[in-house]
Amino acid sequence: MESNFSIESIIENAAEKAAFKVVALIGGIAKTTTETPKDGGLLSKDEVKVMCGGITDMTLSRWDKSGYLPKTRVGRKIFYRVEDVARITGQKGGQA
Image (cartoon, rainbow, N blue to C red; front, side, top):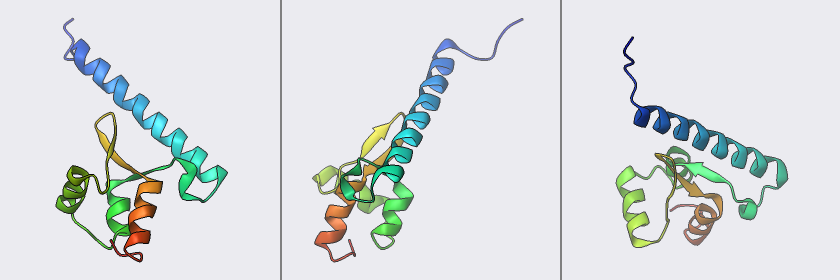
């Protein structure tokens, strides 16, 4: 019986599942400890776009390239640190 899955795809799938578990764990810890920006939590692209007044993916990309709002990768997913988002929304009076 021949399998349709390569070892590479199996490893990639396992790594992505592990990355999701790490993000969930970090997010859960952040929510249960404090509400401060120093909690080490991560935000998704969509969450950041809403928090920054409905900005676009292109704006996030430019901000990452310029160092204004660096992204963090977990597996193939892109996240942003809570403290970085709080920093820029505070600098812009809540409107980035």
